[in-house]
Structure formats: C-alpha cells, structure tokens
Length: 124
Image (tube, rainbow, N blue to C red; front, side, top):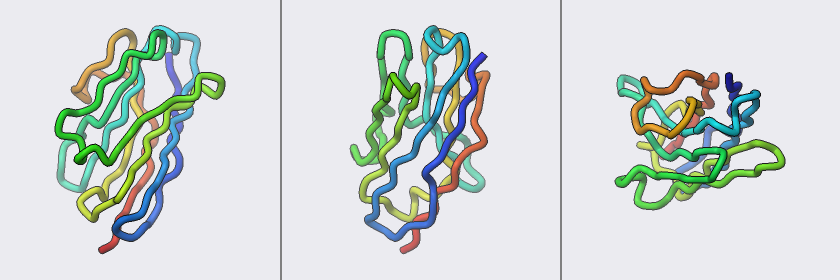
C-alpha cells in the first residue's frame, strides 16, 4: 500500500511558477509507480508525468504543457515534485498524486492510491 500527500498549490497570476510536492510512503513504494494527474472542472483526469520508484524509469505526457512542467524526486524524502512554470489560466485544476503497483500507466483508473489533491488556480 502507498500513501500520498500533495501540497504546494495556490492562487497565482499568469506567468507564475509553482512547485507541487507529493510525499509518498508505504512498504511497497520501492515496487510502485507514482504519477501526477490534473483535473479541471467538468473534465477527466489528465496524465502529466510518472516515475517508477525503484529504478527511476519515467514518462511525461507527449503534449504536456509545451514543456512548461517538469518532475523530479528526492529519494531521501520519498517525495516527487512537479514544477509548473509560466502558468496559464487553462492550467487551473486540482492536481493529484497517484500510485499503483508495478509499472506506471497513463490512465487514471489504473491507479489504486490517490492523494487528496491540491488546487492550482491561475488568474489572468
């Protein structure tokens, strides 16, 4: 089982930068994958990026945000980060961290564990 806690969201202006954190824990983390999704009002959850914790294999959505979003992790803190650069109003969404055993997936319903989400609101 994997526990996930997101933080770092907020209300910002267009062009701002935010760094979201996903603190992960659990006995099975080393064999799990952790991913970032976002969900705007009325929309489905959208894959952003993922990492397989054990070996660091990773993926980022092909059309992801013109390269404005980057991920990283801190093994010592078992935390995955999502840096959101040059934010736009259309980036307004709840950003979620998700976990699943084994290899990551691009599909939200393949994930077993979810954090509570962190709201990002970008004003124009």
